[in-house]
Every structure is written in C-alpha cells, then in structure tokens.
Image 1 (spheres, rainbow, N blue to C red):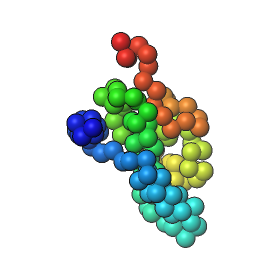
Image 2: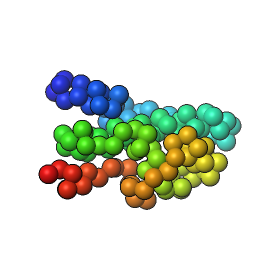
Image 3: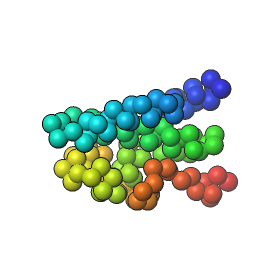
Image 4: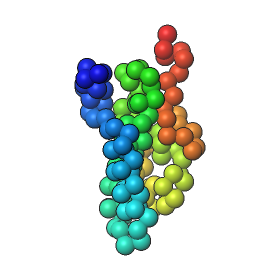
Length: 119
C-alpha cells in the first residue's frame, strides 16, 4: 500500500485521503461562498477544492495513476466549465493562472483515462 501511495506522491506531488478531501473541501467552499472573502482568499480556497477533486480523480484511476494528467493540466481542464465556481471573477483569476483546456466535461470532476492509453 505504501509503495502505491509513494508512487502517486512521486508522480503528482500529493494525494489526499477521501476523508481529508471532504473535510478540507467543505471549509474551502465556505470561504468561496462568503461574501466577505477577498478574491485572493477565494482563489486560494478554489485551489484547495481543485486539489481535493484531483485527489479523488487519481483514486478513480484504479491503479493507473501514472496515466493521469498532472495537477496544472487537470485544473486547466476543469476550468473549461466556467460555471464550476459560480463566479466569473474567480473563474477568470484561475484561468489567468492555469489556462483552460478541454478534456473534463461539465459537471464531472474525474479525468478519464482513455481505453487506448491503457493498451
């Protein structure tokens, strides 16, 4: 088990447990929806949410984490859906940092490893 986790960390830099993802994501969403939070605070909180989604997406690869895109690419793919954070200003600040790519559909948080890539 440790070598699997170590492999993920070596490739992607981190992996969070499901429990940590849900806990930290909940706190981050509170910052994002708080009207008193600054754009910078919301931006940082959105990155935390994206790290949680990224961790869950890696977990869904069923051991093929080495075929999962890196975090920056994943974020750019997630930003293809401009409604993901329900704030144009927050979305634009994230796009400015990460860019925007196709690859993850609206409403999804999982990167799909193509069957072709598995062979």
